[in-house]
Length: 329
Length: 146
Image (cartoon, rainbow over all chains, first blue to last red; front, side):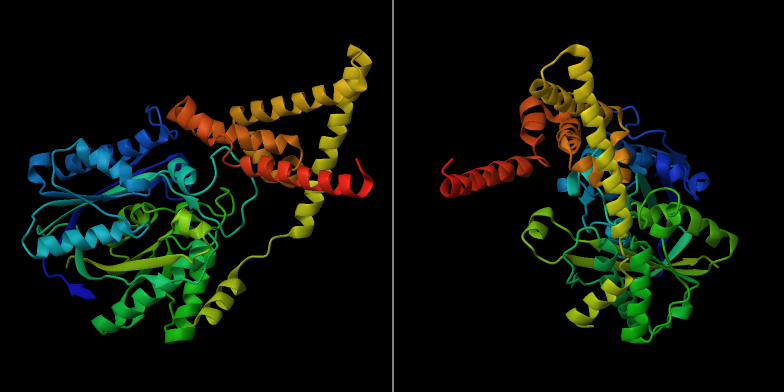
């Protein structure tokens, strides 16, 4: 399902990244970075709550607005019951929508916000996402200090939060159109091969977006997928060319951009809901403001993994949402 | 794309793990751990006059202690990651699994956190260790009569 927007803009963005992300190739262009995994809090979970709270504050400061100017907060993360978002929302006096599409939450949030703004239901909407390496590892994988061998296909959950302020004011980056993806069965049961789980959803959403907007993939200067990792990216490229004869020369994956994959010990790349917006709101937006990219398709991919059903030998479903961003003329 | 085709595509891009290299590393590291254990037994019997059977117990306690300590100090996980099964199969791996789980849940209370989660990784080792000891003990009893 694809929508077109006439009057929705991402006015401001804010990125806060963790220590390892700071040491990566994009480290210098994030708005704020952290020195450790606690940020002065007692637990990692509280640290993740702080990531979102701080992001909202910094975003408002940047946009020169107060909390009273905001109509709605949309936020998502990886914790059970999206705990980090819920607690962060309890600290601000705002109507709140909590969302979960795993690592596709960022674009899910942007689509909901854009639709509400286009329909005049809200003026200023903040969309937040966060992930924290240690809270995610603890919940989905092994204890953080456990060093058992992991396969090369694994990804490393990025730490950070990314927020965007959307409104009708013609400032920043234009949200041109968006496609809501369908949940796909990936046929994969391996929890350490998320790239393979999500590539199929990414391919189907890209194809649906191109079909419904009547465009070819070359229409975009860049198609940026979420957190497939280097092996997932290759699967997606092959899938698109074998199945739909789409030659994706302008395709890249944000998981391969945050870290120095060969030297930072992150296996096949980054992951987590914050991975894609961290790259988009900093690196990609900078390039768009400089004029290097004019039209960019952002495809957030999420592995809808549940630790119980995976242990019950069920395959992992996945989803991808796409949003088309343009430089304002 | 149907199921078989997609799985074949994902398998094609899956990197191969270097099993031979991993096995050699684990063999050497495991051998080193064995030598270290023997050295500890010798030290305990030679310098502290401990009987040999007791010295083995002391050696195990020492290795468990070191595994736990290094896990808490935060560098044992990268060591395990590099040396793989050379450190996981010996008693150090068991200590590491218990300790890392205990560390992870320490903020969630003594009973609901540490107590309930400490055996998360190591619990199945104990369960199947006991089950197999019982099974093989029974087989031995039936065949040899004790």
